[in-house]
Amino acid sequence: MTCNPDTRDISLVVSRKSLVAQDIFMFELRATDGSKLPPFTPGSHITVTAPSGQKRRYSLCNDSTERDRYLIAVKQEPGGRGASLSLTKNVHEGDTVTIETPQNEFAMSRFEPTQYIFIAGGIGITPIRAMILHCLRQGKRNFKLYYFTRNPELMAFRDELSATELADNVVLHHDGGDPDRAYDLWPVLENQNGAHLYCCGPKGLMDAVRDMTGHWSDSSVHFEDFVGASAQRLDDKSFDVILAKSGERYEVAAGTSILDTLRGNGHVLSSSCESGTCGTCRTKFVAGEPDHRDLVLSEKEKKSEIMICVSRAKSPSLTLDI
Image (cartoon, rainbow, N blue to C red; front, side):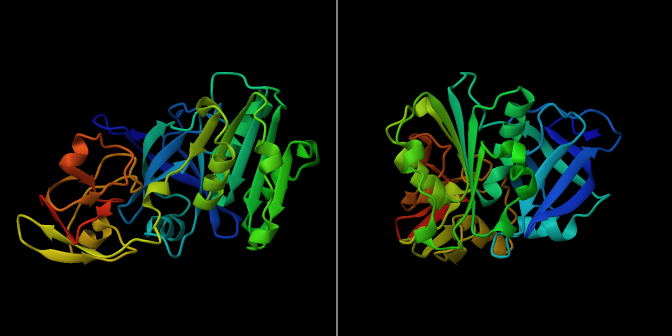
């Protein structure tokens, strides 16, 4: 295992790559020298650098007692920003990838609830799987998983979760893309009854779950959301971004970030999560009114800085100190 002493970066080898559902690839990562890996807890993620140079967070989906490997599942997103395509198409068994050591912003509570309610949609099953493995290893059966996909082919770990011994703990549901066939979660979430909820999935699912658990205590509801802040909004409009030092001016389209616009015009800029949660791309602005959508900046910092991966402009133009 190669480790950079000045950062949390380590180099790992892809020991196995496999297709675990339609467009979803599993990567098994191990130390190049066979040594133990830094420990992690259920709900943890690692940040992986794709061959394109982009960095993305991926949840670890294996048992946290395993010290010899990390498992991540990556969904190939043809309409995404390129990191998933770069990883799934250009990284193969035997290749080496650079990751940042595990971090956990979706940790299971130390409080022992009466029941764990896990809700996952699509690729959102990855951190939930690690939590379920944790429960099973500790002999806990006080959990219920509700896992939703459009069709069975899109369901990762389908055979595992369909096992007879999990029949009482798992509900698998496919709506075929028809909202009228969506699973009714209200009877599940109407009363908290000492339960803790863990939810990961598409924005629509998580928004619905948030609405249905508004009467729950904040400490009992947990969400994992790497892309929520970066999701396009229906009322997004184009605006101009101006670079103060050169005077260059670019139009930022409604479906494109400031970061991607500048990169598309030859500017090399640092970023990591690209979801408004890490702070890597913070940039000073000198004119205009930002539309802040990050989860990092304080109210004071928002008066002079902006996260160019997710935030936009309320004014017709925004001038950056670049």
